[in-house]
Every structure is written in structure tokens, then in C-alpha cells.
Length: 113
Image 1 (cartoon, rainbow, N blue to C red):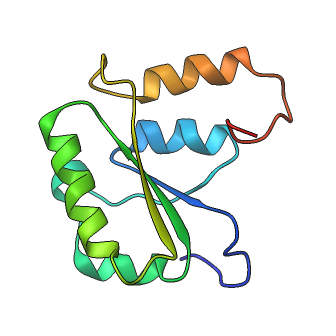
Image 2: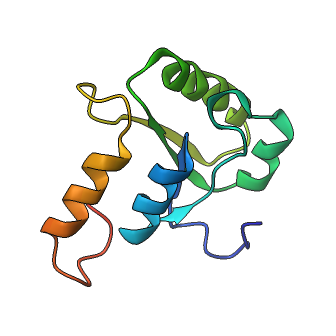
Image 3: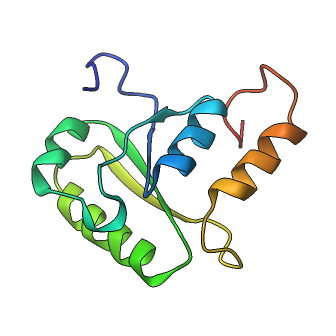
């Protein structure tokens, strides 16, 4: 469950566990849902109410469909919604995120700072 009061920080919401772990290693606040691309339930959107949310899409159709479903579910609840298409030349963004993490110095914070 996300705590209130820190809602200026964006919440990263990837499709899968590997990507969630890689984003967490980069310093993001991360939430995800069970059962991957087909596991989102509208009730989960309530946990993100008031938070800016960044959705990370895998390049395959289930991943893109997942992002559309989640974005629709978050409408009117999340403070803002951004969609990042993770490296469309790959089907799983976690590998690239892990490569990016190794190239960064410790303490750099989330990418894009």
C-alpha cells in the first residue's frame, strides 16, 4: 500500500516483476500487479489515487494492452499518467533497465535526474 504525504514522487508501474525489481534498484517507488499483463483489476487504481504514475510498457502486444487497460483504470484517480514504451526493440524492458543500472554511479537516483 502506498502511503500518503509523499505523493510528489512518481510511482512506477511496470507490467512484470523483473521490470519492477530493476526500477526499484534505480530508486523508483514501484508497484505492480500479480499475474502480469492480464492481472490488472480496477480496484488496484485506488492505491494510486493522487499519485503521479509512470506506466512502463513492454514492447509486445500483451504489454501494450496492459498499459492501455491500466491507464484507462487510473483516469480520474492518479494525479497524472505517463506512458513509457520500454525499448520497442525488446519484448522485456527489464534487461535494458539492468544494463542502464550497471552503467550508472551509485546514488545517481532515478534516471532522468
